[in-house]
Amino acid sequence: MKNIIYMTFSLLLLASSNFAMALDSHKKDAEQLIQLFFDAARIGNNEVLNEFIYAGFPLNEPNSQSYTALMVAAYYGNESSVDLLLKEGANACIEDKRGNTAFMGALIKGEVNIARKLYKADCRYGDHRNKSGLSLTEFATLFGQQKVLETFNQSPL
Image (tube, rainbow, N blue to C red):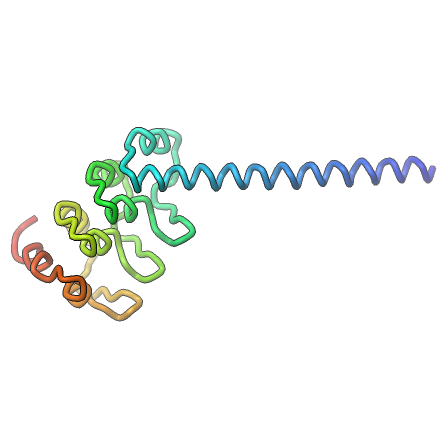
């Protein structure tokens, strides 16, 4: 009887160890897929982005740094990726851990065409302050983009 209990316990221990290794392997696979999605946004690989979209990947899911794919694409100047993500329903109003949006990332980098598209998303920037306490106007001024922001405010987009 002791041998049966010992063998059963040993088999359960072995099975749980294999299960834990399998879970760890799946977690690493998932992390690699997520990284691939964000890399595609960063380099403007719309073919890969389309595959993720087709598979139902959550477009507004932030990465470990709190950025969405839209933020990454905007920051790196990938206008066609920004267009694709917006067309597929990416939310331009999501804030990162610093309270900044994709629009603000495009503004930092001087990506005027991308910033114009993201500004149209109507994220209600009038009262918005990021976590540093900067209004949109103060933020634009800090990065030398106040004239760009003024043109967005003055002309119909």
